[in-house]
Image (cartoon, rainbow, N blue to C red):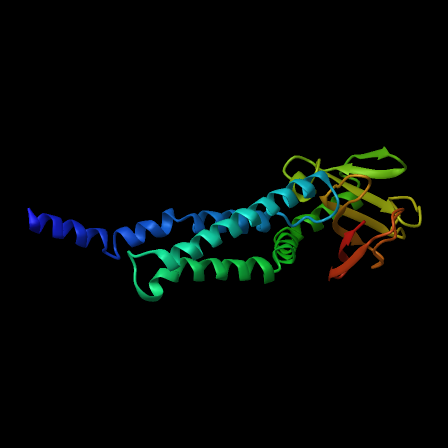
Length: 225
């Protein structure tokens, strides 16, 4: 009987059983994963209901993370099941996650990934628009083109791109200065951001005044209006 009790105690304190399982069931892991995922997918920027929801979710995630960190810190100083620096493994883990969340440029990283991964497909859309293969519709004095099935993921918020002939030259002439905006954030109150193709290399030549312009490649820019 005494031998069985001793074996059970050894199993409970075994680093390959209880400690390993507690790592994956610890609130620190769940709070950290939730925080990093929210920051990873909230990269569109701009002023919109979408951004408001993500900002709210991000704020809640930060509050939960801080609360869990405080609990983890208290537990590290009061626990008796682990000795030495091993008690602080979750504290170190939380500090590492906090460092990543604060200093890693999530939005810039996701922006560059989206642009590079979909660059050839967006160039194909530019070619189709130039050749008149995509249907044009008019709204509020602007030309809007709805992308075909299979291409609508390139422009968020409806699968449409905004097309502007900066010099109002006929769209089938080679001389026109063509501007095409692939939306990333459609926004509210006329605020929006996305990737802009400019045949003349002069971004922002549209009815709205851009708040920021970032060059990406030749004739391609990230713009926020």
